[in-house]
Image (tube, rainbow, N blue to C red; front, side, top):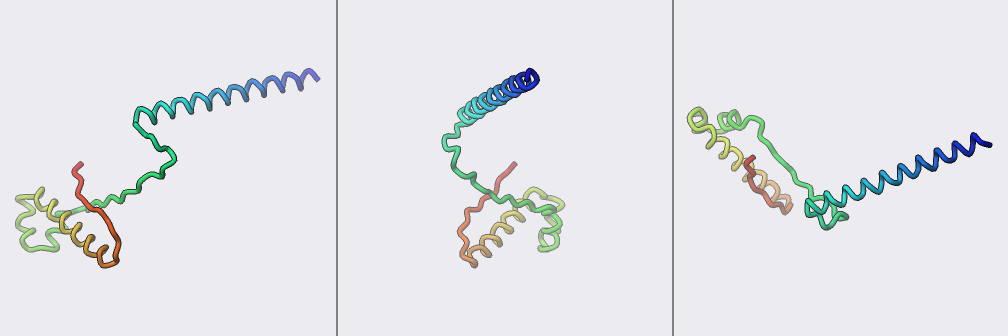
Length: 108
């Protein structure tokens, strides 16, 4: 009987500890959401598709004669032109399939 009483007290103390941890965790989450200015936690996150051309210089050299010459001297400009052309082609394809998208180039 004493063993069951001790075991019950230990379980009650452990349950109280877990409840306290959950309460503290919720407070921390609320503070983080407040500091990040998240007002609508139930709203689904926005999905964004990121595209990266792995080797834009080789793509430019393969697709364009003039890029073969420019790629060695102006690689930044050639990369930018490759991304702009990829964006145009994707936009054209998505328009044909009647998919409404907003596209822009991000510099990181």
